[in-house]
Image 1: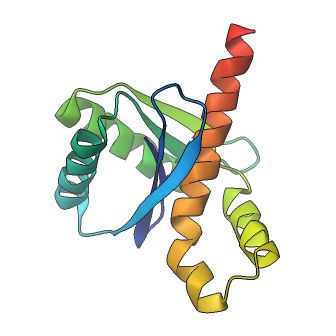
Image 2: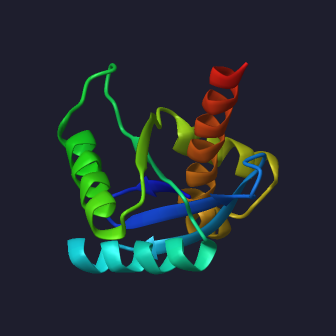
Length: 136
């Protein structure tokens, strides 16, 4: 399961059992640290997640305040849910998501509703591709 963590929303994506695909799942509205962890935990359990990947918002390959917040959430998820947590650079995933949705001719309203979960799917795709490259 992958997360695109923003200040107001968290985009969620999942993969199939074989780790071949990345599909957007949903968008969670941020409700506060503890409630966010509970909501992610419920989704992880429902989806049978074995790993949580968080997109890391690096700036010039540096860990800034936003990235620190994502790392903190990842550590909290690992402690509370007992699942392994990974991080991958999320650079340009939201831009890529917007471009893909523009090509698909989605309305502005529809793009706003789904951009976070599409970005989460791109984060997951990067993670899966990286894992595949390590095996090869």
